Image (cartoon, rainbow, N blue to C red; front, side, top):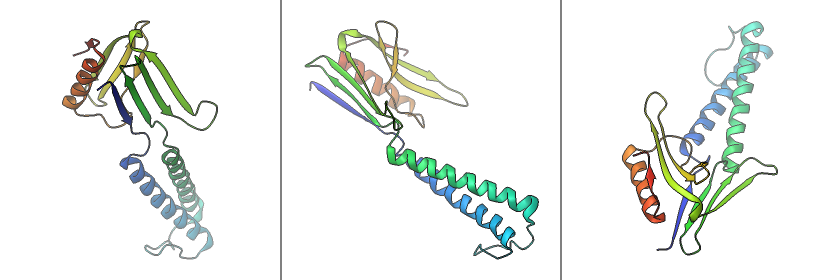
Length: 179
C-alpha cells in the first residue's frame, strides 16, 4: 500500500446537530413566551404566559429567544458548509503529503497544505489530561512547524490516538515523538 487517506470529520458531527436542535427549540420557546407577554395572546401550546409582564421579563425572554435562534442558524450554517472537514493524504510513491480543510466562505475557503515526506522531521503526539483534555497528532516539519492532523472536537481514546500516531509514523517511516 503506497497511499494512505484519512478523512477528517468537520462540523457534521452528531453533537452539532443535537445542539442546533436544542438551541432552536429553546429559542422558539423563549421567543414565543416573550411575544405572548407583549401581545397578551397565548402563543405557546403549553404553559401559561399570562403572568409574564413584558417589561422586564417578556423583553428579556424575547432577547434570549432571538439569540437562541441566531445561534442555531450559525450552527446550521457551519454544518451545511462542513467547516473543518477535509482529508489528510499521504502518498509514498510520489513522496507527497496533502492536508486539505474547508473553512468559512471567502478567499481562503479551501485550505490545501502540501509537503514532501523529506521535509517532515517527525510525527508528534501531544497529550494533556485534566479538565480540558487535549489529544492531538501533529506533523512536525524540519523547520519546526507543527501542523495538526487530528479533528477538532471530543478527544479520541488514548489507546486509539496512540495507535493512529504509531501507524502513521510507521507508514511514513519517520520517528514518533511524545510517547
